Each structure stands twice: as structure tokens, then as C-alpha cells.
Length: 255
Ligand SMILES: [Zn+2]
Image: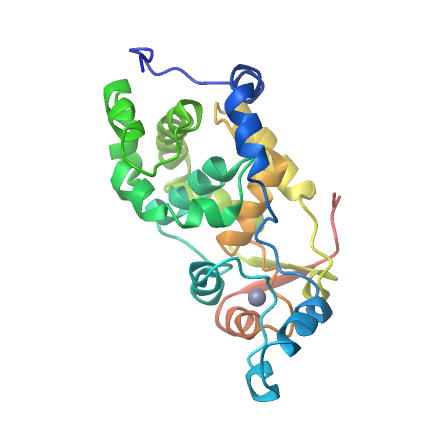
């Protein structure tokens, strides 16, 4: 496939308009986003297949695969301060747009290899030839617009790092370095986005990032532990709230 020789920012609107056929195919594969489901729903599902002893280790998420369960149990919501990991999370949200989370998670190793472990400088210097090669990797997502968007975002992530000291500092500055616990979320009232993610999305778009809508950014904040949306009965909720600085807040412009 011939691709432009110069990497240019791609607007989110333009990306959707220009990729209707592929997006349509991707949308057919869409399933639930990785959000903690209401505890009672999770309990109903668990009771059908586990003993009461196992129920003591309460989860709060419908797992699409073993990798999905492991991701919830070890990564989701744990505060991230490493720039490569933070950029990986943002990039996975970009790749996930219109697809199921599990689809992306199952291919994470391929994406890590194609994007140099999500090292921001290495990704920012990728050429269109590099992206063409990545698109040929068996099993990888064949969406040039998304792969080019990741390179574009890495270039703007370098600018954020220069301004804020690190890429992760940019995100943590929005919450003064604390994990936000919104009222009601611990009981399963999880929004798709809120005022905080909308403000950050607007700021990132202004800075040239793409695939950073309020919903993508909210999922990113959840994944990186800037917002904790584990259910209060989930053992990961206990782990995170007992080991990291948190702040309780009222709900804020939830949608
Ligand atoms: Zn949980």
C-alpha cells in the first residue's frame, strides 16, 4: 500500500470520513468497553460458575478472555508514572476506537514490537516506511490512520514532556498527582466520559493529538489510575486506595 512520504497530523473528523469502509468493518466487531460492571451483575454471573469461597475474591468486570482478567487483576487502575507505559495506554485507547478492548489486548505484544515498546522518542521518529512495514506484520491492526496517529501523538508527547517535565506529569497535573474517587462510581455508576476527560481531550486536540475524544481519554484515565473506577468490593479497589494517594470528588459532568 502506498502511503504519504511525510507524516502529517490527521484530524479525528478526517480520519472517520476517510476510513468509512474499514471503520464499518471494525464496528461490526465492537463489544463492551472494559469498564467495571455493577457489582450485583458481576455477582450474578459469578454465582453461576463459582463456589462461595471463590466469591470472596470479588471482581467487578465481565472478562472476555484470560488476558482480560489478568489485565484487570494486575494493571487496570494502578497509577502509572512511566512515560512509555503512559503512552502505551493512550495508544491502545486510540487503537481500540471502534473495536473491542479484548481485540487490542490480544494484540498488545505485536503493537509493542511494532512501536518500539512505546518509547516516545523512538515512535516519534518512525517514518512512513516504518508504518508500512508494521502494517505487514501478521495479525496487526491494518489501519494506517490509527498507526500514523500514534506517530503523530508521539511527536506531540515530546512537546508535552518538554513543557511538563514528563509525559505522565501532564496527565497527573490535572488531579494534583492524586487518584480521583468519584462519588457513586464504587457502586458501579461508571460514565463513558466526564468533565475532566472532556477538558483534557479539548486541550490535547488543541495541541495536535488525534483519536483523543472525551471517551478515549476517560478510558485512559481509568487505565492509568488517575481515576479509580474499580468496584468497592473488588480487591483491586482495596489495593489501590490503600497504597496510593487518592482524593474523593463529587461527580462532574458525567455522560
Ligand atoms: Zn475491579
